Length: 466
Ligand SMILES: [Zn+2]
Picture 1: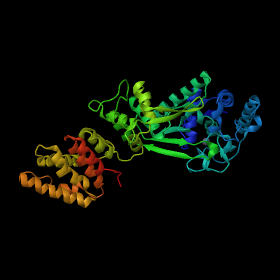
Picture 2: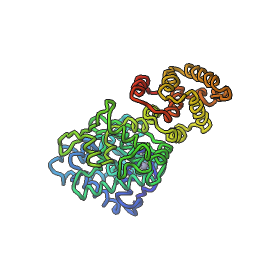
Picture 3: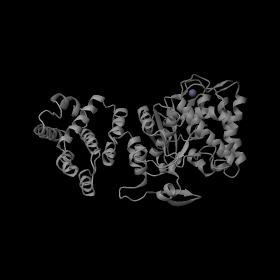
Picture 4: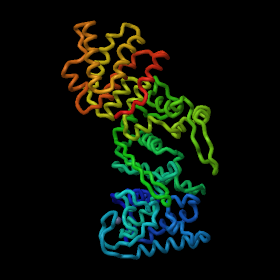
C-alpha cells in the first residue's frame, strides 16, 4: 500500500499534521506501509516516553497515550497504541474521507484517539464531527503528527496555516527541528515559544517571516487543553500587515534599543512594552521549575540587555495592530512623524494618496494661524478640533478655521468644497480617524510643554474608535 502526503488538505488540523509529518519524516511519499510505520513508531515512542507532564494537554484522557489503565506500564501503553494504529490501517470501509474526500479504503476512527481534537466549537475542524467517523489512512496518520508541528503559547498550543506554502514550510522547519532537539535533550518535547500572549507571539512570527522576505495571508490558531473543554481562538493576519512591518521595522531590537529618530516604529513597540498606563515598568509571571516567579521588565530587558524579551510583556500597540484595530490613537498620543503615519495609512488602511495629500495640505494651511507661539496656537486651533464630537462638528470647525485663514490671507484657501466632500470627510470614512490624521500632521511640528501635555491628555482620554 502506497502512502502519499504530498497534497494540501482543507482541514487545518490535518494540514498542520501533514506538514509536520513531512518535516518529521523528511519525505512526503512512502512506497509501502512498512516504510512509513517506522516513523509512526518513532513518534508514538516519544508520546509514550518523552512528553512528560504535557501529554495531557494534547491528548484526551481517553487516548491510548494517556489512558489510566496503562499508566504504570509504559511499554504496554506503546504496544497498545501501535496495535490500535495497525488495526486502523487494516480496515477498509467504503465512503468518503471526512477531511479530504478521498473515496474508499477508509478507517472508522474515534476522535478521542487523536491529539487536540475533542472540542466541538468550530465547524471547520474534524473535532466538530460526531465521535466516530470515516477517514483515509493519510489523513488519519497526519493527525498523529499535529503536536510535532505546534508550539506552546499562553499555556495552550498554537500553529499557523498560510496561503503561501513557503511560510508553512518555514514554520514546520522551525517547529519540527525544535521538537526533535527537545527529544534529544530529553526535555519536554513540545516546542515552547515562552510567550504568554497570543498577539505577541503572532508579532514575533511576523518579525521572523519578514526577515526572510516571506509574505502572505496567515491564520493563527490557538487551542486549549483538550480535557478542560476545548476552545479555538483564531486571528487572521493579512499580507499588508506583514509588508508594513517589513517597511517600518526590518530589524527588531537586534543589538540595541531603538530611538525615536532612527527607528520610530520599534521605539513605539519598546515604549508600549516597557510601561503601563500608570507609567510603571511592567512585569510578567513565569513558571520556572514549578514556581511562579515575577520578572520585572527593567531587570530583564534593560539591565540584562535582553531586548528580544520585550515581546514577552503585554503591549497594547501590538495587541491592536495584530487584531486589525486602528492604531492611530497611539500615533496621535506619541506625536509620531507624518512619514510613519502615511506608511500605515497607505499599507494597512489602503488610504488614497490624494486624500492624504489634501489632509496634509489642510494641516499645513492651518499653520498660518500660528504666530510663532506654539502654546497659543495649540490652545486656539488644535484643542477646538480635538474637542469636536461628531463629523458635522468637525466639518463646521474646519469651515470656521478656513474663514480665519482667509481673514489673514485672502489668497489662501484651506480646502475647496469638492475637497471637503470627497477627500476630507467623504461618506463612509470615520470622522474620528480623519480628525486624528489632521492632528497627527499638526502635532508633529509643534513643541509641547508639560502644561499643554496635561490638558491634551484630559481631552483625549479613552479615544477608542467607534
Ligand atoms: Zn483523507
